[in-house]
Length: 233
Ligand SMILES: [Zn+2]
Image (cartoon, rainbow, N blue to C red):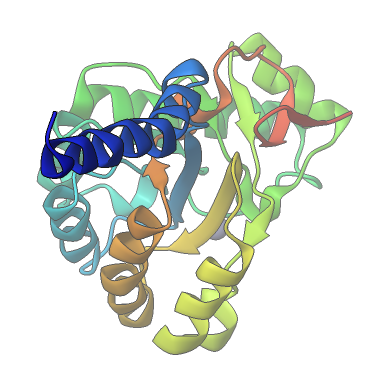
């Protein structure tokens, strides 16, 4: 064996020794998948389509918590969202506080909102988000009777307060964590603008953007979920 060949062989052996352990480590344990659920409340609105376009561009999924009264005239937007794989759930008919409403009002509000959604998208929502994230024994009973899972959030982007795209973007990026449910609203131009930069940034950080249903996995009707694995008792 000449010196040159021996040198090449040594390099090859060293390379295998250095590279191989890393490769085996990666293969042995699959990397943890980071998942996050973006939720958009109070729509649909004139800004919803812009958000849907961004989601489609990055093959990301989200959940739209719609108001019954906003659906008339915007049925096509919500149907397009459902057909694109996004989750559509009720957020009450007109954003009244349910905590102080009668049980009869709560039941009727949920029924009317969900029926309107089902008439548009063809399937009945399994989740519900109350206005202001309110929960009470009365609300829980109504949800359980309707077979609905109540979903809240653990990260508030405060878009309703700031209506500033930089601030909303920072709130998303600074508070993003595996299993989080983020609250925002598809009724503000600033939210739509923030989402345009936040979605690719989240994907760059390794996040998969999924619906609430996909994020939470197994759930029970009548219970209140804040984020993956976290319930409000
Ligand atoms: Zn709301």
